[in-house]
Image 1 (cartoon, each protein chain N blue to C red):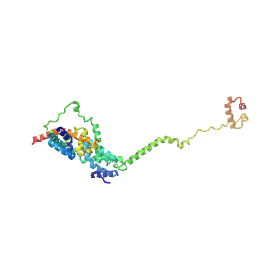
Image 2 (cartoon, rainbow over the protein chains, first blue to last red; image 1 turned 135 degrees about the vertical axis):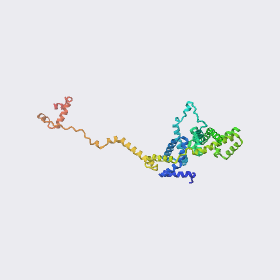
Image 3 (cartoon, rainbow over the protein chains, first blue to last red; image 1 turned 120 degrees about the horizontal axis):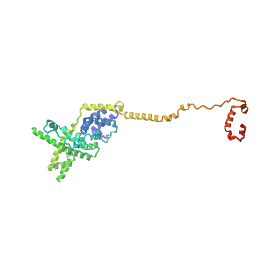
Image 4 (tube, chains in turn brown, yellow; image 1 turned 30 degrees about the vertical axis):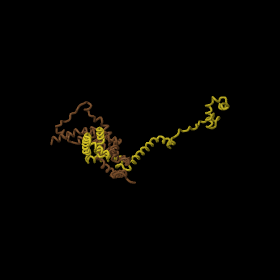
Length: 201
Length: 176
């Protein structure tokens, strides 16, 4: 019978087979292949290093204990692992929802940003990673998941729909909506950066 | 028509930018971008955001090797007790099932214990209360004349208990 799976996927399936037959190096190899990207996914969704570490560990623990349940015919191991991690991330931000509510919103207090001419403010504004983090935090969890899977992990819409457990069209519209929201929150920063650069030169 | 073009662009630009549209749709979007200033502006805005995300997100939250090693160590230690000496291999499920089976056997033995005691041979060896021995009465001349053996005495005494009911019968008369 001809194997229609992509070469990388077939190789991973062989490693899985080895692990299931009791080869412990197989587990180590799987961890080495997916740990970094899975950690990045968890961190991008939770914005917290400790939480990301915990979820990464929990996800691998679950995956290794239930490796027999993995069906290579249904999805790739990467998609399966991401599904496990995303579902755990959802549980975590559901638990933390009440803790992360902005108290200033409750009491109608407007927190003042640091003055624009302060050197720290300029540094913060130039830091692209922080800008993205801020923009991502402003997104709803579902839109954030779609954007992170799309741009952070380079997944196709089909893979995103498998990980998020929704139809492909829904995944597409979530990416589009997230994109629009990010554009609104990123563009003022972009303009500010541009102005800053023009002033310097 | 302008509105339609703009809406169509807005919906499909993300896919257009990542090269995921069919040739027909791709050519249509390109034409709309060329013809409509609104579509062109939308295209520039979306391209800027896409570039920013594609540049920054893949390096976002990249872990150092030490952190990943630490997680691997703790992962191994968490898996070890469950698998009794290693990562889950082929014998992982077997060990768990053996544990459950042993527990069930033990539970069954505890529950059946009271029933098994009822049939234990030690029950048969428990001493029964002693049987009443035949009375040996001191023989007197009066008794010797009426009865010559102990057996007759006992018969006599049992009859004397029933004497009120047997008053008019030949037996009662004999006894008196």
